Amino acid sequence: MSWWTELSAELGRETQPVNTVVRLIILERGIRGGLLLLLSIALLTDSQQILGLVRQWASALDVEAAPELTRRQGFFRQILFNVLSWVGALGGRTVVMIAIGLMAFSLLELTEAVGLARRRRWAEYLTVIAGCLGIPFEVFEVIRRQTVLRISFLVINVAIVLYLAWAKHLFGLRGGRRTETLSA
Image (cartoon, rainbow, N blue to C red):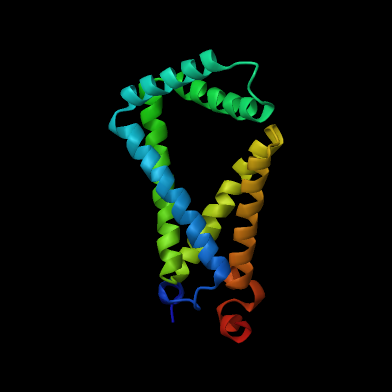
């Protein structure tokens, strides 16, 4: 049997039934992919109008910032103001490029979710490879500035990659495909 035939058989086969952890991965990828797809469509449909709206929100938040706000409300308001100010300062062409990148990433996330839900082996490999490609960027962001959100994304991504690679015997781990059904 040639390597191409073996590869096609490996990637095309159905995997073991979906367990709770894989269901959570499917849910996470599906929600994130869906939200990012909606955001990218909104940015692509009328980026100039959205930029104007974002600029209005940012200026309204800046004007409404008052000392009588509680510390927590002020903190989240400041985060929202910073994000909206940054997005509002971007040019229309930059927003379109960001929207195209977001759409590509969201389609990758949704492809992973659908493939995992259909128990496809290629989706397990795709999820691990895409997750591994994102880890260096997440590590860079955590090193640059540590926040609970950034650290959470990094830990979740590493956990997903390790779980799928180990539990699903990907890339020859734990004996590869030959031992997958024995340990299930």
